[in-house]
Length: 279
Image (cartoon, rainbow, N blue to C red; front, side, top):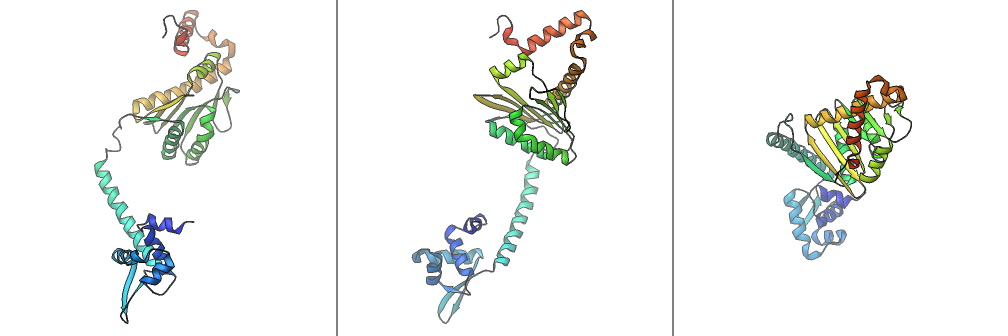
């Protein structure tokens, strides 16, 4: 614990913090004694002490023609600092609330770069979730965000997660939908990286592209984007389970012409680089 650093956090300069600690251990001290005990230059000690007196962290008195100093009791100092901080924060809350956009207003889009910054944004987003969380995620990011997801569930927030881990498909005992990987999906990840999608409370969104050489994310408060992500996660989980349970018989559910359209659409959507003229 660094007391000097903590004192500087509440408004002391480094030398003032040293002198305050020195005075705190004595009933009173002269400027010379304060400089010696605190290890500050004698030439500056009276300037330091006068500053402390003006800030209310030290008291000065004249006794028998000698000017002495004592520290304001730490209980009084901390109580005053606490009250000052609470008053300032309350005033700031009122002023900032008046300056900020209304809570229901959608915020402009902004971008983030870097894996660590993107994951920190998602952790903050999940920590603030109150009503719902939809997440499409891969194992590397799941290791970091698993606790934030678990904490949200503990608060009673419904969390729906599709995890692309390439393992055995299906829901585990935590309600996480494990999604297998097709050959095309595995190749796409190898060539272009993977994604991370997080939508909380239907409007707070993060859409991240996580390639080996570049990680970027689009972030916003936007209900349209939120609905796209929640729909993506819900459909992905539903189709994964439908495919798992129906197996090879899945295509028999649809007429032959419908299967042709679906296969063609999936090919173009999943592997556009295979299309003639693709650049």
